[in-house]
Length: 505
Image (tube, rainbow, N blue to C red; front, side, top):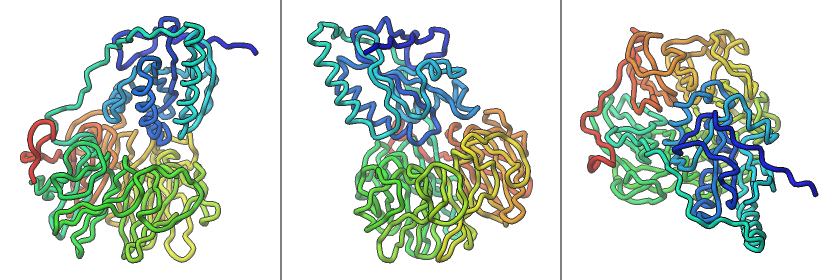
């Protein structure tokens, strides 16, 4: 059997989370896992807990090195990657694989891919896809046994100089993902995703409540003790005074009762579902897969199930949850349940007749006709996994870049075009898509129209002729007047970071 020596890691590439570049040669005596990933890929995010587990279990033997190989143009930028390391609490070294140099040298073909290198510097396995914790665990144990016998293991403690985590400790919001407005109650619900909590303010920013401890976890109970894990989209039932939350990191749907001030679990088991084909069952007995956004219509809750590339539906009357449309294949295919396919839907909204989804990995806006036989169509965007860009136009001629937020208002679907740092709108019938505000450059600046700057806006909501925008990487809430197209930043003078003070209850 021919042994293949691992290609060396270039010193001239940017390195993050370490003081200086690492090399295969210098790490002789240790098992290395190269994790080829990209920041916008849901499958790549799913493996972060697996890598954390393995790093802790084998801390005397194992070194994990992330190899960030971008898919989208925006993912090439070092600042964008650094933000994702802080957002997802990735602490191992990461090399920025500019121009796919390492991707090609290691003949990688898919995200995520793990390359396992033995203590003598030889490639022993290349494994693609999520859900590989046990496979990697067993392989590491095998390598430890084999190399203990050869005395080729180096058990000296390896000290990597990690950069300090930039948590913006005094920032009231941290990577806010989604936002939801209620005109009738003067509520603005904010998924303070990086702080693992839900914030309720008035539409002018006056803090009314903070729900969650600020620490990641899964815990039901009162608002002060409840815990979430990277919550995202929400839906509000004014009559019941109930807020439904996509508790994305926990793979759950949660219910916040605004009258009793209690948090409970509505759907999911707390473990990620591995089933991709259409299925369903009793809500609390059915595992979910990264629910990312919600919209309520009647007694139905429609769910952008990013992890399984599907749209799901929960019947709030009988307590069941099931696939609404999508085969589970990661593509853009229009049609009925039997053939329709999505690619990481991350935003969802409705006009009552159709449900609209931001299909992030195909950079498209999709529509699903409601009824006994739901039908999917592509409203705008190329509908291709690598068909992204920044072009205003009609239907398939328009280009978006990893759009992840949508809201229906005033006859249009408004779009958070996340990696283009813009707010756009598309007419559902004419399919004309156009830029409304924002500049293709990353920034943080109020202004009118394209004079305003954003950084990865991810969530939208509407109230009183304003769009409220979760400007995720600016850790801010912005407000766009649809009359003047002026963008301003909403202030929260009474809101504290959980690291800085005790939140308001």
